[in-house]
Length: 339
Image (cartoon, rainbow, N blue to C red; front, side, top):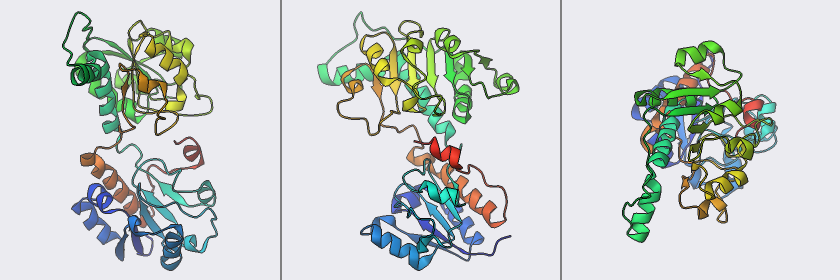
């Protein structure tokens, strides 16, 4: 059991409201001597942020999207007591310099606490492309259009779905797809056979098998050096004619130039929430293809579901206090492969 210390919450008003419900706030009050919230939007500049760190010298810091970047130098006086940073959201790349993790700072993020919400967005994008709903909505608003002989909508029922990657998001998506009586296969060499069997998912022996044998492909592979642009034009052309490609994983796993060409030619249906460069540049070819469904990387937690990430963070804080095993630790490998 660690000595009870102060827990500092560097959260904006909206972050505090959305991520930490009253039950979580009450739980924090029982874990620490005191809980102090500082609004990151109140800092006039980085010097003011660094001055606050030097004054308070936090041991435990809870952070979110609005938290300013920490100092690069692990020996910075404002970091002298910092042992644990509990990040309530995902990537910490813009917040925590790599050197701090190298020096031993414990960092956690939301882990798999929001996987089901990302999977839900994946299901939305699959249905959107099958029904062409974003295209018809655009045409009806812009052109006063109505359905014609080119309707070409399809159903998800009884389709064949391929998942590139079988991590926590894919596993949640499998559950969401089951009511549609689909057949599901996945390519994920590191996942053991028993996991495939438990989920009722067939193992694809290669990416070629995955892409050629499924009408719908959902991209959810981790971004590793080996996976950078591994989904190239050759693989994309293996998707059956008029098939669906959805990316809610990592943009850089895909050769986006090839994907844009195939989408523009009408070869496949495409829906994207992630991109190799974000925000998506104004001159991106995807913006000019009206039948490509685009979302601005919003598959993460909706406002009403951010509390799940907050509850996960509070659980980790509780484990930290009792010196238990923390969940979703950001190690150097995870840091290097995050967006």
